[in-house]
Amino acid sequence: MARRGDLRRVWFQVHLWIGVLLSAVLIPLSLTGTLLVWHDWTDGIANPQRYNTSTQLASLPMSAYAQAARAVLKPDERIASVELPDHAGSPVVVTAAGKPVKGARPGSAPRPTVWLDPATARVLDQGDANTGVLRILHVFHGTLNIPEVGRKVVGWFGWAMLTSALTGLWLWWPRNGAVLKGLRWTRGPLFTGNLHHLVGFWICIPLATLAFTGAYISFPQTMKAAVAPLVGEARAKGAGPAQGGPRGRARPVAETMLTPDQAAARALESAQGGRADARVTRLGWPTEKSSDWTVRLTGTTAEVKVADASGEVSVDAPKGGTDGVARVMRQIHYGTDTGPVWQAIIFLGGIAPLLLGVTGVVMWLKNRAGRRAVEAARRGR
Image (tube, rainbow, N blue to C red; front, side):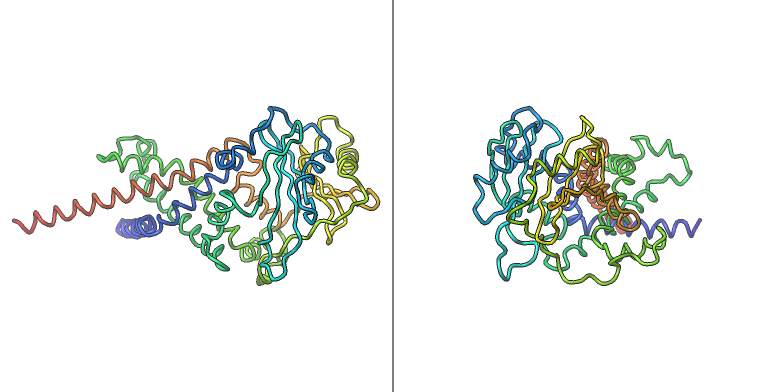
């Protein structure tokens, strides 16, 4: 029992000081993640003009959206992709690439973007995808705005949050093993304590999941090397030291052999067997590094490639092994294609650290005040 009590005191101190010292960073990281999981909702508040659409899904040919975007893009800006919304009320997003700037940091080049009404191809807004509220949130959540080492710093905060969640579960667990009694509201005399225990229990596993997946994303090479033996790979591809910084995107070609409509039609016919309910969700243009159109379709996670010169179609099935694990980690962390239930849990997981941090600090201050009062009473005897 003494050893268990000693271990409990150690975990309590770890849990306490993570909450007291790191909340100033963990809370903003969690809140930005909450805003990013519902991307369209956040963007709609910051840029309502982009969502002033008709209540119809995209029904026009790809060429119509491309032509509407070209009308407002600069001559040296080439269309890179057209992305169609998956629900009514969202715009068609056309992303372009400008002329490379000599000496610019890779990944920092402007990304001209045009937002269109799905039913009419009317231009709703245009701007740079590398600026604005969403970009600020993405950069802060991924790097804390710290150059070069920011992603690793965020990863270490992820490990800290994982430790906090697991130690919190350990401390919550009733010593007598009466789990159902531990779920009662009146576990202690303080409102803040009861709120902390109850919210902490229900959110600790989702919070630990988000923390672990975030840390995994922040250390891709290290985690690939660790996971490789578990998935049957002798060595994870690219598991060695990272080579340089982020790489820039390949520029789209100026002219294509196939039209956007032809590329989309080829993908639908060959990859989906001409199914009437299949539709294209994203069309990527050939680039100076790859002469293939890339097409995403509903109902599949595979990426269809259409050769621009011949129209030949190939399907890139989702990669397995360490690449597959990394994809699942990103999907869980960002809530991509996971449905509204998990996205709602992520949303609550982003808010919970604020509530847990405030109630935890209040509990700590009250405990300190209580101990001081007891010590003062003892001295006064």
